[in-house]
Image 1 (cartoon, one colour):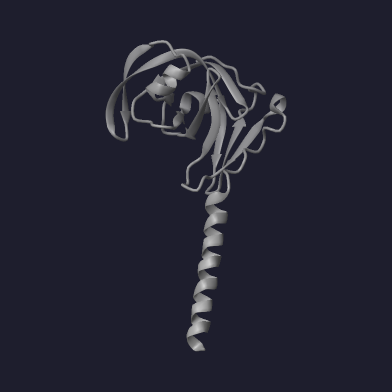
Image 2: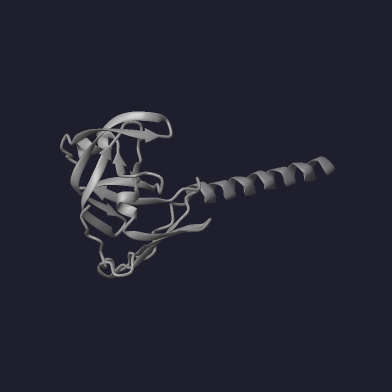
Length: 170
C-alpha cells in the first residue's frame, strides 16, 4: 500500500511539473505596452524575455526583423541576409568591434527603421555577419529616447522636446 502512495505522489509531481513547464514555455512573449495609439506614443514598455534580454518586433525598410535592444551597439545592425531581404544598397565598407572580435561589414545610410510602433527614417544601418536571426537596435536609434531599465522591464521614452514619433536624421 505504501508503494502505491509513493508512486501516486511521484506521478502527481511529474504531471504538475509537466503542466508548469508547458505553461512556462508555451506562452508567447508579452506584448509591448504603449503602442495602443501609435499616433500618440510617448513611451513604450518592453518586458524582459526569458533569456533576460529585451526584444522588439520591427522592420528595416518595411521588412520584418526581430530586434535585440543593445545599448552597447553603435548602430542598428542586421546580418547580410536581412540586408538583402530589406533591399539595402551596398553601402560603405566598415570594420566593427564585436564581442567576437573585429569583423568587416558595411554601413548603409538613409534607411527607415521601425521598432514596435516607433519609426524613424534617415537611419544608418550596419551590415555585419554573425547575427543569425536577430538584428541589433543600437545607439543611433536609441539615443533619441530616454532608456530606463530595471530587472523586469525597459522603457523607451521620447526625449523632452522631441516629436511624438521620432523622425530625425543622423
